Image (cartoon, rainbow, N blue to C red):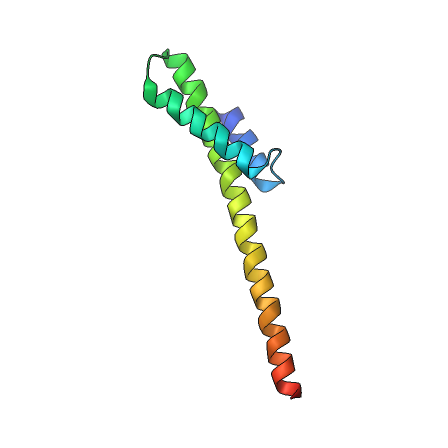
Length: 88
């Protein structure tokens, strides 16, 4: 990735993704399909690859957020159960 694109992707990952997980995943699938089919110029290939990297980072951000939410919910549930057990 170019420095500018890398900074943009890092900024994107640091904040809330601008597009939803499903949209990013679907677009990433299309980018991969186009890259695998070949027949594109080097410049277009690089542009597709850079977009794919950004989309992969967005997907990872969504997945990491979902994992954190699940872990937080489990921890909260365990705390509630622990408190209930102690009171009983």
